[in-house]
Amino acid sequence: MVLSKSWGTRGTDIMIFVLLTIVACISLFPLWYTIALSFSDKAAVNAGRVFAWPVGFNLSSYKIILEDHKFFAAFLISVKRVLLGGAINFILTVIMAYPLARDNKMFPGRKYYVWYLVFSMLFSGGLIPLYMTITELHLQNTIWSLVLPGAVPVFNVILIMNFFRNLPKELEEAAVVDGAGPWYTLMRIFIPVSMPALATVTLFSIVGHWNSFFDGLIYMNRPENYPLQTYIQQLVVRIDPALMQSLTTEQLIELSKASDKTLNSAKLIVAMIPLLMIYPFLQKYFVHGIVLGSVKE
Amino acid sequence: MRSKKWLLNYHLMLLPGILLLIVFSTIPIFGVVIAFQNFIPGIPIFKQDWAGLDNFKFMFQLPDSKRVFVNTIVIASMKIVLGLLIPVTFALLLNEIRVRSFKRLVQTIVYLPHFMSWVILSGILIAMLSIDGIVNQIIGLFHVDPIMFLASNQWFRHIIVWSDVLKEFGFSAIVYLAALAGINPSLYEAAEIDGASRTRKLFHVTIPGIMPTIVLLSTLSLGNILNAGFDQVFNLYNPLVYSTGDIVDTYVYRIGLVEAQYGLATSVGLLKSVIAILLIAVSNKLADKFANYRIF
Image (cartoon, rainbow over all chains, first blue to last red; front, side, top):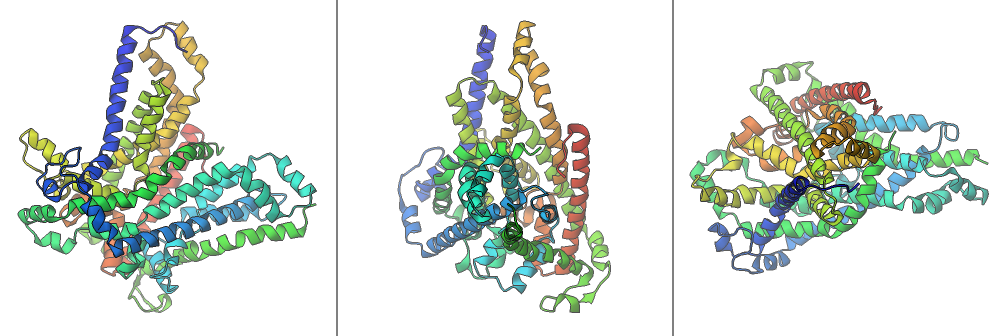
């Protein structure tokens, strides 16, 4: 591939390098800036003296978070939600994908189930009817309202179903000859050989659970039941609409200056730590996942 | 070898998932009947007072609902166009890089924002765009007066669209990078022998090579024209920018769950779903016609 390289191409190469470096910096800068804010002195932040490096380095906002019981309660609820929700998503994905990966002869009911899954993916009642269903079932203020509505990750089931279908038939036949039943075949043959694909979709579902705030906001009436993202949304992001409408621009400016940006930034960073911890694994796996998704035909 | 017992086990494996889907996905569909009722919370659905098409008539008279549909379509189409152009450009640039470690480093960095929640990113954006945030500091160096970006109807849509691009461009580029990797290298060799310059190779080999993917993704994106991104708008907007930023989903949330006008909110939501389903059907047809691809 590498043939002659004139000075013109060199120049283009350098330009592309520079351009991509700038793009990467722009992508990373918001995170970097938030970290700088979180370690800075409050007065320096409010005076607008922080650019890319902490000014008046200190850990006071992190100390405040360490003593903040509400923050940790919310953090814990999110961890619980991720573990429970991720496990349910994983189990349902494999036990649904496996029978659906049979061919029509082996499992005559298959096509009706697949049809129903696609139907569920396309049609939904929308926000209000789902909200009413959850309240009718009295799931409000329980972790189940966060975990059960999305318990079946239909898209992942279809993805893994296609993955299972592409596995060599001999693998399963050998197990069956040895007297394995369907559950045993699934546990001992299908799950182990599909681990990269399953890890991909599970990591995605974990990230989804960790990141969602809206169900926490509408299904939890008591702030002490909020998962972390909802807690942060309420404290850091939300501006009271009633307040907004009644204020003048000058008052708004004062209000935005009064907000504790240092502490807020530290909260955002702490909320991101788990994600940054699993990111290397995500990185490793999700390219498989994308390829997996694109080989549908 | 495969007995009835196997079949029974298959049904058993599917049972829990199907039950959950029935409860949380299919039963709520019947809940859309409240779009045709004067719904009062606390009374069972079948005992509610029927309103016929009143909610829909009312919806079409409201100036707000016209506004939210327009905002939704404008924001979503801006996102669709830029969400196509920028990832393609990025993928083409990255594809020119032969130094693998640099390539991988850039990719690792630009994928990261995709995994952050809109709550976190909004928190960051609010800090950056506030009156004493970094963006105003920088424009202050050029003697421009500070701007209240998030309270300005002039800026709000741009902030929504460009921050979405920033979050997603790297991740969306993956598909194009896969398509680029799939181009037959002998095409480049042939072009090289014919004396094609780098630009010529780009226009005659590379871009035609990923064109099917571009066509496919752009037709499929048509189905998303009513999805302007609830999480993002919800976390960044405020009453001052309702006229340019309020979208269907945020409106449904406000009139439904905040103001408890369940019937009206459901009818707005229902109209959105009906249009969305039609659009998905159309985009599926178009994808089949232009890119030979069928989702269903």
